[in-house]
Length: 108
Image (spheres, rainbow, N blue to C red):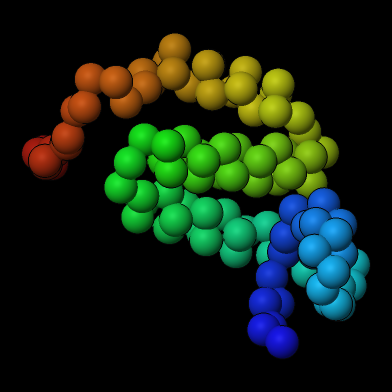
């Protein structure tokens, strides 16, 4: 039996059970939960970086977005608030659409 020891989506146990397989799970403590969410964010980002086509890229971006939803809730916020902060920052500092790559800044 493979060992995973990782945070999974809520319905994964149901899916495993429907497949007729045996498994074990446990509910994480709050401190473990945030640690595992952060770890999952890196995992999903790595999977996105290693995609080779649009379909897979969009799938991994959706996974990252799900993690962002969970992280915002953990921090007592919402995706709506996160999106508002994103818009404010984009208004003040811009986004990444112009592909600007900073090389150096001269100190006086």
